[in-house]
Image 1 (cartoon, one colour):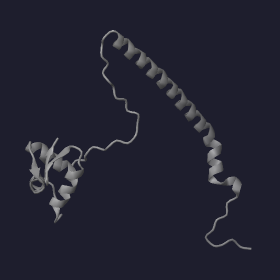
Image 2 (image 1 turned 120 degrees about the vertical axis):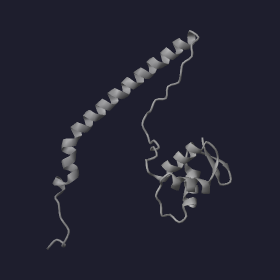
Image 3 (image 1 turned 180 degrees about the horizontal axis):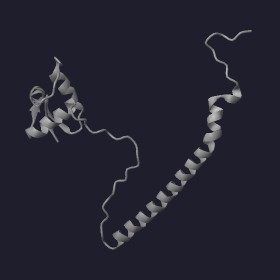
Image 4 (image 1 turned 90 degrees about the horizontal axis):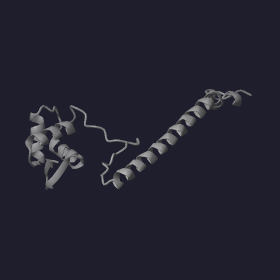
Length: 144
């Protein structure tokens, strides 16, 4: 009996998963051990910081809160040359509220190259979603 054309038969003992597991298991074990060690060190440091905070508070001092970055997703910065970058530049230069059409005209004057026939509409969508922009009225925005 012939195997179907296009189908490859691989013996179970030589599958990629079993080969990867053979060499990867010690590496994964070592990485997990390092991670556990670092987590234990972090827990010890957190306990020391808490004790120092209590001592400072007991002496009548105040402790400035320190924000520790624990990873996770961060909003990327606005890339240069993009429409949001030009919008932000225009709003910060104007120092006051602007209508969407005014922003669109100012963006083009600032050097943004666009063939968008509905640029004010696109600018309005970006303005509504930008975190550094505050809506003042209907179709009117300003930089925070």
